[in-house]
Length: 342
Image (cartoon, rainbow, N blue to C red; front, side):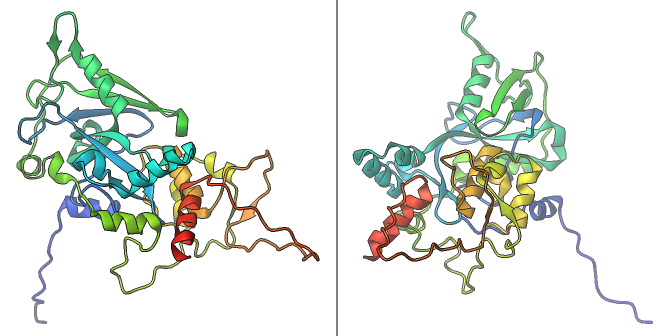
């Protein structure tokens, strides 16, 4: 029997890991795909912050400002105004909302401040380099503990040879999520392979960012196109196969952890659970995708997501339905699209 000429090609760990992080979503993000993202787990997390490798850094992290949950796919975009001092369509809409007195809507459009830095997860060191766009409050607490105002001493947590590990403890979910920070008492070194150093030097934090053009963000924001607009295939409805699943706003908000991930899968939603910083953010995005709104009463009546609501019997003189209040970004954008079509 002749021997086959086939030769097995081994794949790298990084390539395999990317497959574990894949999702069905096609939404835009602001970090390059080749950079693995870090998400702290519930409870204690031990990490080592890595040094900055861009020119003249003043901090190990880079301050960034992000607009989250934009468009039908809940994409995330760097604020062009805050980051580049350029016109930003989302900030322009926020200014209009503030001028009109719509404070709730304006608040939802406000860019979120994060601090982006590279790290090694001490509990999963084999997974290599990761980037975390941490809440700015976490970065502030790290620096409070890393500086001694009396002795004017600074403990360089990001020094690869004499730095300090940082323990991040995450508790609670949603709006109750809290982080506590503890810095190791003794310095230690960390061993980084050549590939990690290459990434640090070739893709420093500023180079890992993705900026989108004003027109692109504006189109996504107004819902006139999607992130996958270049595809020739039409996108399936996000709630396909969800006919038998009944869920309420309260039930989604009461769900946490892996159960939220399962809900995303069962509902075939174009959301990436790993890209949300908290269970609350993910729960809000799920409710937004499914059109579930916070009830004004304590009623817990279930709603079938894809089932058309029964229509009331016609009356001789039906009263017109009032315009829906701008209770969410999605409802406000729907109004914008309607005005654009008129």
